[in-house]
Image (cartoon, rainbow, N blue to C red; front, side):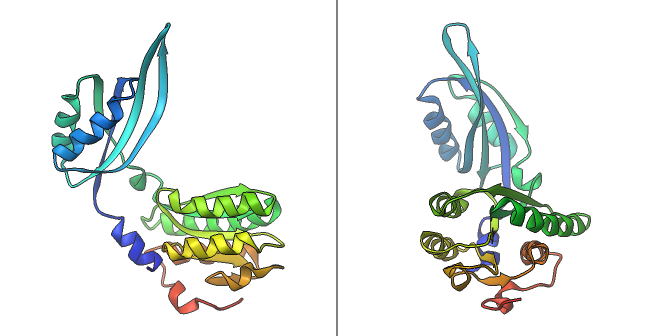
Length: 232
């Protein structure tokens, strides 16, 4: 599955609400069940914060993003759940932070990739896009491979850039697994087998960041499918 097809599959309209409810183990399943009963599909459900009250369990705030149901119907459905203290509309994260480019690797390299990615994202966001750039500097094959695999679980992640001086082994296997789930990988030209397991290899880190954003932007003409397997 290509990144564009994956994005189209996950871009159905959603509504988002913030729910304040008692901190009980049965409440989250009850809320999800009520959404299903109302005809909606929960896409994300996150506990935002816990609010303690004296010696008791207190209450929590959760945020839901739901498809296939209108906002007013969702507010009524969730408000009727016993233990829900309040519910209000909010904005889904895809309308705030949009598509995400993830950069993983060494601090010096990802700083330069981020420079190119942020500069290019700014250009497209001025045209109405919403593209955000997230980075994490890591050391060791184990930690980097774990981070690569975790990208598949990050909401709105559209592309991964691997920035470092040497990567291979389990990192390469993790990159293959991620690509199989529809998230392309751009790698810097470095020592190790990762360059044989990436969709695109770019020597200049600033250019790598720029091309990563262009690959996910709707307002760009850059097609990663046509560049797959190339080195720059």
